[in-house]
Image (cartoon, rainbow, N blue to C red):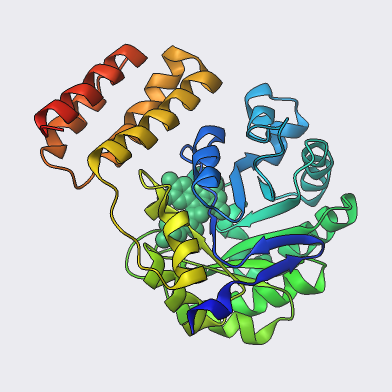
Length: 336
Ligand SMILES: Cc1cc2nc3c(=O)[nH]c(=O)nc-3n(C[C@H](O)[C@H](O)[C@H](O)COP(=O)(O)O)c2cc1C
């Protein structure tokens, strides 16, 4: 019975519709992306991971990552900022700085598999069994430093021989984390293979805080399957939202009414893409913005006729005018 999911999960006092949330994605889910994700139905957003050290040392680019998209209107709410680091003191200080930007939630990254993060002892390095004490210390330090809810995002474990999401989630709960997001892959898997939803179900059984299920949800039906198979309290979508932010609207509608999603036509796709790219340029200026827009634009074109040729053109976009011309060409080619 689909409608039973049209409920809310509470992370302390933060109320989130049980549809789907946008996963944190460094270099992808910036303010512009989060704005379109939110506009097209994301129940909750998590910002790009932010270096605790960078924040504490006053790095301006790092601090800029904490900004709420559309702060004045409170549009991007509820929302979390995510911190990564390996030292409890830095994480605590960074949390205080981050709280100054008034997010609803601070999330701790214990899942990033990227070498430059892991080698500093942060991200998924915190999942190594020998780092359990440090992991607990970090959660404890962040929870003690701020008075907004603290959550954590983990993976199933470091590798196939150390699947420890249940233990990790219990430690997080013990030290005061108020929700745990579980990506059902190990660090070693990075993004390969398929996510093990059994791990998410096991975590759900083991803790009393909300569990956010994550991994491989790429549409409305898959989202409902994630809720049903894992018992999770909220579903989080990452990669499938790239070039398809309306996935959240599809999910919300399906969860609310059981109505299956209908595909957007080319004109509608290009309209969302234009909206997104104009926001990137508004936030980052035309030069840097269009560099960022290249990859975002290419994602929107996935699956359309002649996509490969258009994607090559995306890689050369330097101005908004280039983009408008490309969009016009795509429509003209399609005879729209
Ligand atoms: C480009 C990219 C950047 C990511 N950046 C982050 C990040 O900053 N913090 C984080 O916790 N997870 C990050 N992730 C992991 C996602 O949040 C998510 O856990 C993962 O993609 C699995 O979900 P999906 O199958 O819905 O994509 C990133 C993933 C991708 C593909």
